[in-house]
Amino acid sequence: MSVRLSKISDWERLALEAQFQPAVMAALCPISLRQLERFFEKHFNQTPSEWTRDLKCRIAQKLISLGWSNKAVVTELNFANESHLCHEFKRVFGRSPQAFGPVYRGPKTPVAFVSPPGAVPVLEVCSQVA
Image 1 (cartoon, rainbow, N blue to C red):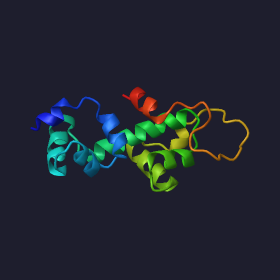
Image 2 (spheres, rainbow, N blue to C red):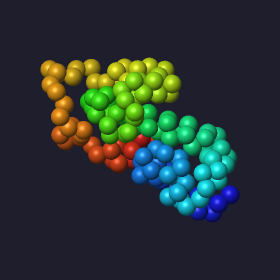
Image 3 (cartoon, helix red, strand yellow):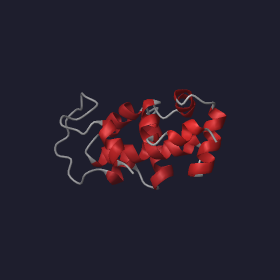
Image 4 (cartoon, one colour):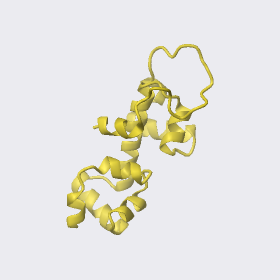
């Protein structure tokens, strides 16, 4: 197996930099996508696509529990749309994203920003997801 891959300790940060795209992750390493797939199969027992989907959903779950709207999470984590977020969420957690939201959301106001004021930056959320 590639020595380069063994030296990588922060796969979550790499996945975030690659916007959760295995081909981009491989290019950042720099190795072939097939080498990355073999490495993931051996070390994580998953394909890179499955692993990045799970990571993306865990980060989304954390953001939603912090009060982020589905729309903001879709934009921040590059889901295709809210339906895609819900579909992936149900595949990973067996429940909809709303099941992880805060109990009280206060009065409904339009959200005109991706990150709520005072929210934890996504890179910091990633470091807390484990």
